[in-house]
Image (tube, rainbow, N blue to C red; front, side, top):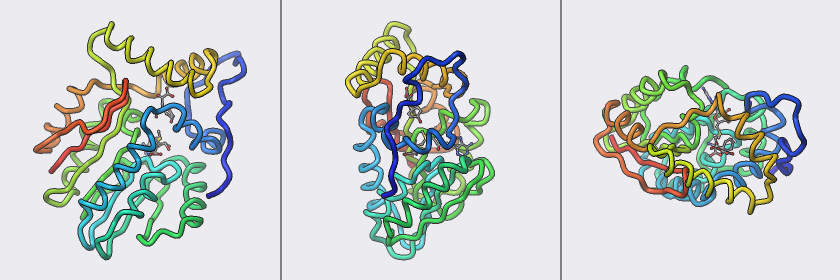
Length: 244
Ligand SMILES: C[S@@+](CC[C@H](N)C(=O)[O-])C[C@H]1O[C@@H](n2cnc3c(N)ncnc32)[C@H](O)[C@@H]1O
Ligand SMILES: O=C(O)C(=O)C[C@]1(C(=O)O)C=C[C@@H](O)C=C1
């Protein structure tokens, strides 16, 4: 593993909080940031690996869209047993892809992992037994989300799955506020200050637009998926499996 630091990006008062970007500063502290920000992150990544062990068929591809530092790709590579598989990790952040390459080299995966630095919307999915978007779709402009899911559906082999993890919004205001408060308390317990929590919330406001569970379910069905299941939820973080 290459060295990575502690997330202190929002720890000092900023004159103006700019929109959140997956740049060099974020890439450098990303393992710490995501672990302390997303309840159940390690559980989710490991379970996605287990699903790769079950669903990957001989000669098929797994796409990890918005792969960041490759946590999902590496977890999948530890569980895949089927011969001749390939993992394709895609991210449009150069800083993430460069670090991801170093992580993967350090790990020496048995399954080949190919990295592509591009907008995931330019990637044609083919011969896929599994596609993963682990906290990535939330960063795509809402009008483009259905198109992306349709492309994934078309590129999946019969019986293939999409794992979609997202921060979600509860439809009622009171219910949503409760989930947000529980999430903020999770962050406090992981050492984030009120200033860090509020400045990051501002930074994410325009770039991370969340949908409700039923919006996700409806869109996945509209894209063609025959079954959609919620397999993980903690506060306002959820992970779904959509089966072709
Ligand atoms: C929250 S992180 C994903 C975490 C990662 N999947 C994991 O499990 O550790 C979101 C990632 O999606 C990438 N991303 C956002 N929009 C993208 C796009 N249009 N195309 C490709 N990657 C994108 C970001 O650069 C970032 O690395
Ligand atoms: O920190 C938050 O409040 C988040 O919403 C978490 C979240 C995510 O869901 O992707 C946002 C940005 C960072 O990439 C890490 C985690």
